[in-house]
Length: 229
Image 1 (cartoon, rainbow, N blue to C red):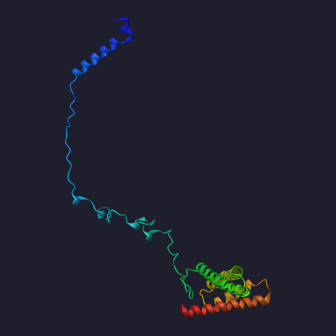
Image 2 (spheres, one colour):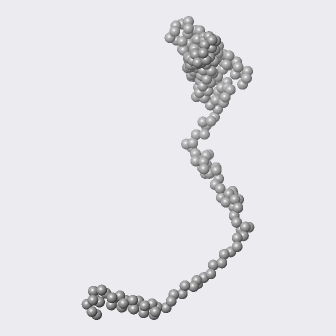
Image 3 (cartoon, one colour):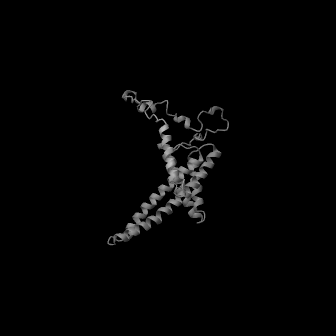
């Protein structure tokens, strides 16, 4: 090999090309023909799954098994109390709604009394606002007067009646617990005491008037309850 061939590498490239050609000529060609054949099967509509195959009763879980007490024998559970829904068994305790005791009477009685008094007070305030405003006044002024009267009379009467109802139900339930029954005497006495307590800071005369009014309302409710229920 000459010096020029050593520097340029022409001899080496020609030698490598000759070697690669000789190796490719000696290597047998690869067989690229497929060894297996694929045949597609025709689609049969009768073999397809429908909705009932995966929405059947056997595939869906039982909803009753999702309950926390599912699979437990409630007869053998000593710590589980199932008497919370039992109604009160005191004589005369039946009312317009089923009652389980003093807590239900307190909630129902106070809520119904408050909403009724709030509605009556709002109606009285609306009439008062319309009467105080002259007919020739602009609509905005009349509306403002009506809203002021409603918000003044409605909440006042509703809050007052709600407080009296809370005290009344507490006293009535206490008397019924110690007497062992609910009757008209319990309601009248509880109404008189709650009315007197409500006006106890105004003097003796307002106390007696308030007690008489609430006792009369309690007596009327007792008569209506016996008549209707």
